[in-house]
Length: 232
Image (cartoon, rainbow, N blue to C red; front, side, top):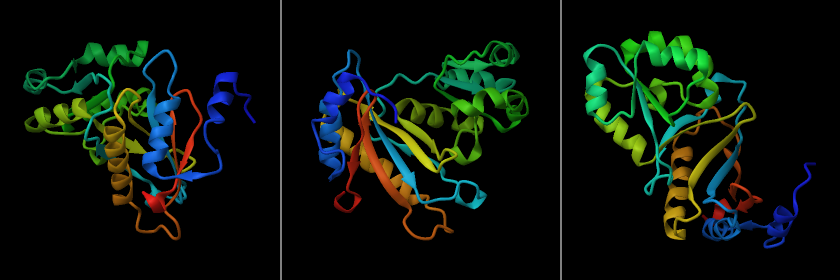
């Protein structure tokens, strides 16, 4: 068992770790525990009843958070030719030419939070998949991040407004930001409900039994509060 500091232990005493709370109450507890010296993120962690070893049980999609994440999102676009100008005109923070791709490959340049690519640029992006993939930055058609130039404006604006990609880890869990602790409870609750709706909407057809086994809401630097899904 990991050893936690005094602050974490003190926060854990503010609620019953074994109790399952209504989503609104869990959000309230997570928000009030976020008393670090920075604006913590309220996070949602889901344990799914999937077998991640099976390709037909992978869970991957996006969710549009009604109130965004509270973070400034820098969007990089991989494009070629005239599509590069279109990306810049549509609001891309970085348009990746060969020099930028080389910086990502050799220097680990990752000064952006989201990435888009045109289908024609994907052959170049493939060279840096090992850098982008583990950080959730690899463009993918299933996540809506491989788009044609005509869709740049929509895709970029959605990413900046709060579209979040989610994908299960190797243990079958999902980890998503709900919003900043400085958000009011109503906004956090709406974002959290949007996440649950999105995850339920991509339930693999081959799942037997319980799909979402456990949900925990937590501030960045605090303990997790269990959520009673039957009351949410």
